[in-house]
Image 1 (cartoon, rainbow, N blue to C red):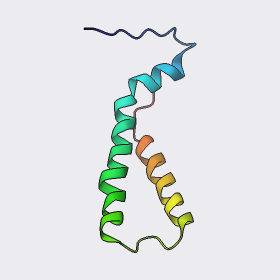
Image 2 (cartoon, rainbow, N blue to C red; image 1 turned 135 degrees about the vertical axis):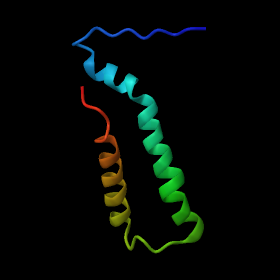
Image 3 (cartoon, rainbow, N blue to C red; image 1 turned 90 degrees about the vertical axis):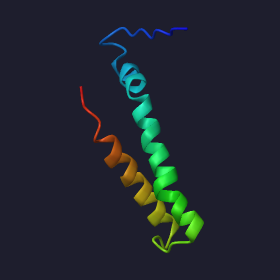
Image 4 (cartoon, rainbow, N blue to C red; image 1 turned 45 degrees about the vertical axis):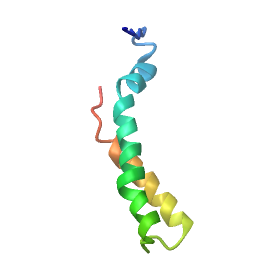
Length: 72
């Protein structure tokens, strides 16, 4: 089975970029969940003192990880 995605560029550039990088976005979320957050849940680490610190750290992690993607 084959699946072909078609985009009208440049009009659909944002949709194209999301489709092209979907696997990478998934990888960022997987790494965040399994390698960064899960150990804190499993072992009760005291890295964060407030929910706001957690949200700020997750926000920064996601943006720094996604910013590493190529810009076209």
